[in-house]
Length: 283
Image (cartoon, rainbow, N blue to C red):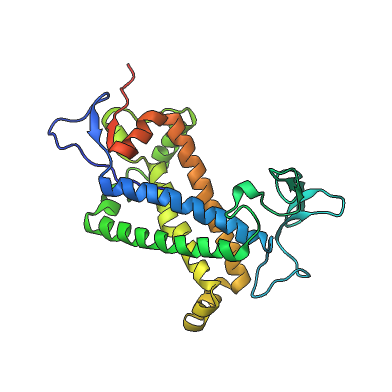
């Protein structure tokens, strides 16, 4: 995951399609790739932690006899399933019941290829998760401080009055649906859909994931008891933590899809070298 910071051209003439411009600073590129590794490790270790008790509840308490609003498991008929509320889907071979690389059938929520570590180890998964949570937190704090100092958030992410007009939003939606991406100088700026996506991650998903993570810590409950009241109990916090994590995963999937559709070589090269060739305007 990355919320990148575009660089403006130092020249006085407006950039046009085909020009190579400085797009990402070195600090931004380092933060992007560190985040990419960190988020993948946190998501995979989080899925292993979830495997220890693949059920989610609302409220302060939750155990096997209690009603779970989400459950991933296997039935006595040897089928895997995912149940959300009263809706149940057969997920045999994918979730709940699947075959590992050695040909062994496993009754576990998420398959080994999606978890870290691959073999069941709750203690090690927690170590991975908490260690890289600190890596993520330090990098995020540095990013936010730097973005406030250089006004990146105000300059590049806050929508303008023109951009939030319903007609403008609908226009951007139609262009994306038709895979009509910005060209020339316009490709250097975020469009309104990108701004909404990035702000939702910065304002809702990441803070929500951090605070719900704090709420699940018994040690922090003693010093910050108001967190339990804020989220309605530890089990509600666990459910919200999972939802926020899935939201970040969805953001990553959409982000990667847009990179592929916009031109993966040019996009990835810009995040490695910092240099980006502006797409040419269509005649």
